[in-house]
Image (cartoon, rainbow, N blue to C red; front, top):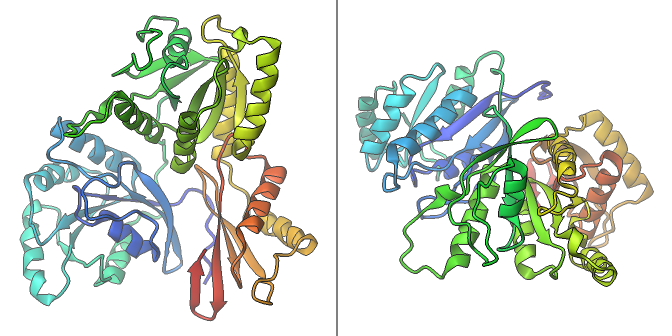
Length: 447
């Protein structure tokens, strides 16, 4: 059966309050453990998109963070999540824990979803057997139509649910605006590298308090700045206020704000201080950006303060300590004097373009076949695996899946990534290369 589709894919958003089983349902639909599942509410914090397939139909599945009834500003939180689902999805899947019943949070969400101008599929999750179906019937009270009893954990009725989702999809997906507005940029880095000074320079205003004491910035606000003739939104990191009974100081909260900023952004500017050695904390921030799958620009600040010896030493540090992100876009700046700051716009645009690049399947396979002929995968256990097919499963960031008859060593996967970068660039964007092993008819596994 052909599954080749051109143009944007229909979007299915999975929404609901925390710990109702949204990520478990996502994994069930995908047929693999992609979303992180834990017996703790609030594990999923960001909206994470996956490409899914059912009955020959491809669609984008979006796992959303839960609505926490104990969080400050419950109404705002519910509205933000529900409006995102209504504005960007073609089908909304609203998940409720049938073993608990409809809570006040569920009722508040349902009131918003009833006004949606697109189909809503109500899922009564955790219906593990026929005896539990009576609980599901009580969810008619939400006013969203018939509750569909499902056990995401055990797979009960999941096929029927997928059929309903496909039936609810429009013939053509609505145009996606990716939330619209200026592109979202996270300005991150360890304390006292000059983030506030740079933001003030970009905004041409004293937006942030600047002090030589590290950690001065506590609750920065969103800033719209004009850079390179274009507006950019430097994302708010203050929305992660939470009551922590065992706080471990300013650095702990700074780490939480950094994580929130990265997750809310499309591209991150990681600011490094040219007059200081690249530290473990710098490395952690860069790792957060890569693991979040965001585009990356490295900005080395205080460049104007360097003497010749430090300049030479810094180049050696970059070569040694940042070798894993050679693909990252890099610009040398001075937030204090404005030197090089205008160059940030072109680096941001280039990184975002790479982040959103999709390689045509036919072209990709032609290139990879040529690579494999010239440099075949090393044998493992006496047999060399054979690469059957390669596809780009997603963008933002680009994700490639290699279908192989055997396990591909990490070194060979790195070789494929390097060659993909040599051919297609991807400057400023992480890319993911995973391998799906097809060892025999009807059996496969992910490596």
